[in-house]
Length: 308
Image (cartoon, rainbow, N blue to C red):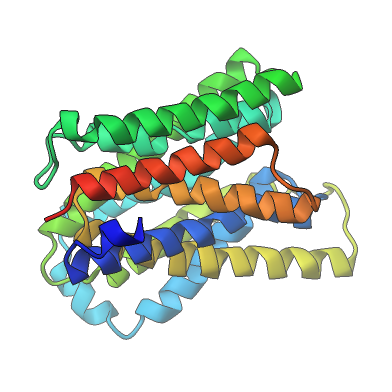
């Protein structure tokens, strides 16, 4: 893959690097429930996005007067929809899918993101013909087939509700990836990082509504140490995965064609799997290792299809 990246422009190389790093940070999200098992997915979601909103508000404060003059009503409505689709709705669907359908089924469906984003961007500017992307899509599909076979062999089933929630999560983030790139392309006075921070501020405001049902009075009690650990985890996830990860993703969104950008999402699956193996202190099985190699090969093939 490195030899293929070297044939691209410096901007494309930086975009690929930013996409890979964003995936590495996003993969940490899957460890959060393991670090604080006594807290519900709704509490993790509310805590994470409140931390994201607070950090984003502090970082964007200096540029706020200029941004307020630059953004229109349509821009604010776009921020609201992107915050809902890419953060709140996506994570709530994902958490519910894991609870009712199981981790294996959910990971298989979410693993389709590189394919759905690539297909959704075929009509976008800079997209290459589908026939040139076919090898990449076939490799990615083969990797997902390995994951699916592993899940079926483990006997972990998924309910109809869980499957629908996983598909809802897939659809919401596909919408976010495509629409967010369109907004970034049309904005001239707002940088990619500033747009990411504005999404964070909007997400934090929406997370205030989640906090009411997430932390009801008289709910499950936790010790002071458990609350401190919870605050540390959601703050770290909010800053590393949301603030830094989303800023890197927005940079990649502006630097790469949407079909290649869609392939970058696969690194979230790759790194989440690697973190899981480290957490469980085991090596991947044969099918798991084959799936990761095939998914990485699919990204390399897509990079080759986009060589200038």
